[in-house]
Amino acid sequence: MFGYPLNGRPTAFFRGDWFVGKGVACARIRIGPGPSDIAAVFCTHLHAPYEREPHDSYICHRTAQAWEMAKLMRGAAEKGHLVIGLGDFNMLPLSLAHRLITTHAPVQDVWRYLHPDSSLGAAIDAVEMARKRPVPSAEYNLSENGVTCDGLFNTWRWNKGQQKRLEKEGHIEVDGRLPDPLGKRLDYIFVGNGGPTLQPSSSSPTQSSVQQRSDWKWTIESARVSMTERHPTLHCSLSDHFAVEAVISRNVSSGETSWQEENASFLPIQKQESPHSHAPSNTVTTVTIATTLPKPPTPSTCTSDMYDEIIKMIHIYNLRERFQRRARLGHFLASLGVSMCCLIGVWWSPRAFVSFILCLMSTLSFAAGVIDGLIGGLFVSSELRALREFEWEIRNAKRLALGMGLDIEEDLGQLGKPSRV
Image 1: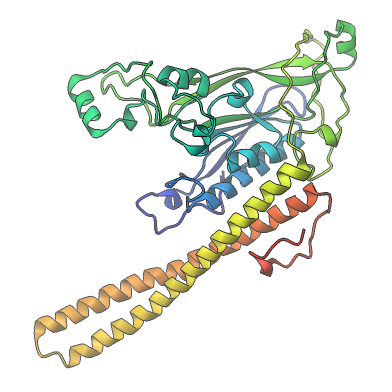
Image 2: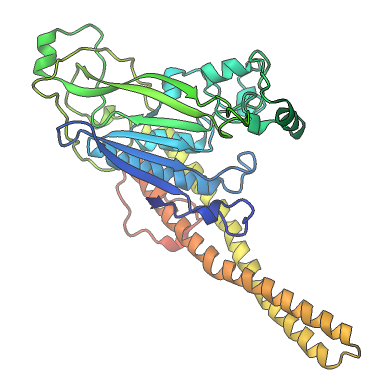
């Protein structure tokens, strides 16, 4: 298990993200005899958004979690392993966190790989309304848009009246032709090829040429939304999110076995040659021509702008948290003064009930102040340190994307100031 350094705030106890300690569950599964025949599986649940982006106060935490997830998947890919990242990412397709994962790690979103024209959010979201597409039906959302959350078929998203009716009447059929304006895709499967990404040939190669020079390649065959069934006795959906399933196949593709950094699908952070996994001698070699993967964005343009966007986000959130720390520590000092004044007032209190009220006010005020003082002095300070580390990594990733190299001497005390690159 890997715990996220930034994972919500303890003050939001009614939401529970901070208390459950979200992170990444990592597993390595051997799938062949070779040293690199390993599937690295990463399962996670990112922080939930409670407001619409970019006004979501947790967007910085969710972006930092996506960054940590991308680093783990990238590290596994550099070892030549098959990378599988999956879970509830609580993000929309092509959002900042989504672009960060697919840019920094050599992975593909399996649904967008198979359905490149699928929706970018719910029909009522601004990003989807800008596409000027008609409101999709519930069936279309499941089959083409990969909707896993807030859809018409999920009973946990029904209103109270519909849920009470379901409880009384039992199973209620939903017409899949009805418009589904709220359904969106929040659950993902990311798959990495494991080592070099080979370019598919324009013509079918001969069997002998493949046997002389071949590398394993993983091909995304299919993906679908599953676990849409109802509970047999409760007649409700099995979860508030539907599941996503994907089928990938291990084939042999022809092409150049040399790996060039300029053709890689992720950013050059370490120039490390990945080991190749070759087919065993007793394996029947087959030839498949996979669909060309989408061309990655140019690191010097799209990625640099994306890093600037993240740095700006960190700067804004850093100012917010510094204000929170000052306010909470100030509240602690003020509560200490109020508590002392109330206790002193008890000495001159003419009536017993007034003394009781003053003692109660002193106790409650001091208790609230101590809690705020602990949060401001301990939690917010540790959060700011995690923010500094996150910004340092993003700044260095930006420098490397621009070919400037690591800036080891960078002063971390300059958090929130404009980048020097």
